[in-house]
Image 1 (cartoon, helix red, strand yellow):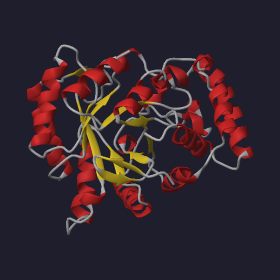
Image 2 (cartoon, helix red, strand yellow):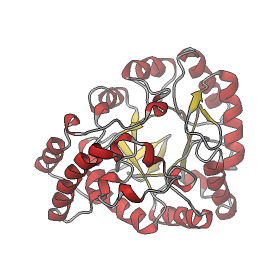
Image 3 (spheres, helix red, strand yellow):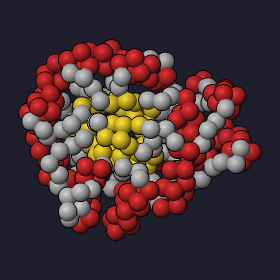
Image 4 (tube, helix red, strand yellow):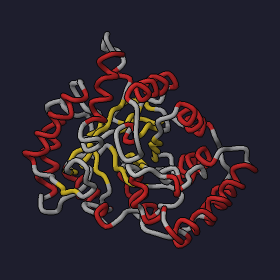
Length: 331
């Protein structure tokens, strides 16, 4: 198993994405989510990813409830790496958003997140999306102040380009950069992942299973009305039909290599890059256990090359977001 660390804390090679416990993937159950967090801690999966926009604070409050009820002696917190984010502002019931990176908002959002999380510090605090109307220097200095006062232990950026990473890192060292990365979303391999390696920044891959499409277990015709995948272009029409043919081949390879699709997807990126940390989201214990087992999978160079060829960037049909989802994503 690879040894990784984030914000000066050793972490399991695969993190837990918590977004689906609050929003976007249909109905959720808080008690089941708390039980899943129990299992994650038991397995050693100690890097948990949240954001203030997930469930309009509900997701952070859920993690805070876990800390309050499980960490009564204040011994578990230091073993966890909890990441959260600011910057996306939405109205209830709406996917559309605006982006706020102003220093005043950063301070307000951080204090609100700390309160909901019921903790004294955030291990990695991300700018969820960038608003170019706020100078990068102003935003980074505001985050640096939070670091100096002990409210956060690491600074992160999400969905930014290589130029922004270099500029930001020169102002204040970054702990992590987070972007979507999976077999069917590989654009970050060109510049983002190499720049992070060069600068010693951890790259955190969200949606490493392609929002479960790559697992081969998603029937797009049965997605509920409150499942945001219903509006994602890759999950519809001819795009979904074409992409499913790739997943069918992936399933055949996984079966031949005696792995699940999810394990193969996660092992692929773990074996390619030492500084990449996938955060696989789930609400079910058996998927958590299945995903965690990928940390021990070793792939050969020929297996990796086979997957690279199958999921070449030109092979994928459909954009990863609808128009409203591109707000704040740097190209």
